[in-house]
Length: 173
Image 1: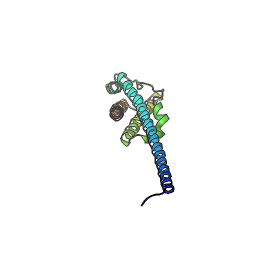
Image 2: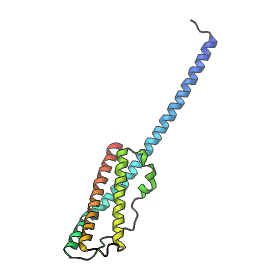
Image 3: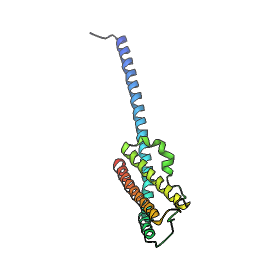
């Protein structure tokens, strides 16, 4: 069967239109995927920076040791001071400004981010409760247990933070 010039023209036009349509859809898809991948990577590295900085602060200021040692001093009645530190500064800017976007990250990274920041918020809340005198009526033993718990939460934050940082390095480096 031989095609006449008119049929060839129709088929050529249809194929050209189909190829243009597929090219448009394909390029839109790949452009969107590239933008999403870039946004995901940028967000992950922002969390990396904030979490690794918070972990460095906890380590350099020796909060785990300081709270544990203060608990021991309270038990031995070597001190009556119940305020080891005051936390007035907000350290969680990246989380607060981007928590609605963490769904673009993997579920494993998202879980570690949420866990890290929940622990951090709990630590800040506990330190605040000490600084406003909420625990003034409690015994030294009770407060020393509280200090041990804060120290343990700092330790857990460090573990969660280290795991998160390593995960981001593996996935996005």
